[in-house]
Image (cartoon, rainbow, N blue to C red; front, side):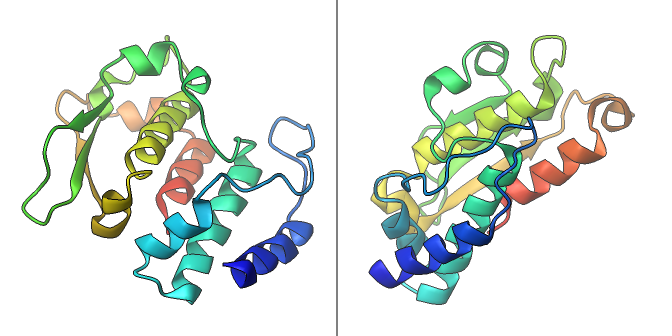
Length: 170
């Protein structure tokens, strides 16, 4: 764990500090409690894979200007009440948790697409704080029912699409 922490601190020193809002991130923000252990569990204890997950997470959050740990207050309002994200009760046949993203429920009059993305990230963070979930994983179901044809051209900018891809990568 200490070796991973040192590697991440070295990475952090090389990351650009400017965020998308033009502000600067404070250097050496402490990692969320249990974060490195969570990365190790999610990769069955394989150090190099866990380090890759941690690096990608930190680089994404820094680049997007998001906090390292999202809080409920960060996602209150439109996305929370939209029904765009569901956590299903129970587990699939492999023992994984189930998370649904209802794309047709996105209403950019209530909140930006980035706020909906933050809501999804917040729920996944909450879901995966559970040790069993870190080991077994999570299934994300993308529900495209009720999505009008052409929605993506008007709803999703290139910046939104890139952020969406980066936030779910390993």
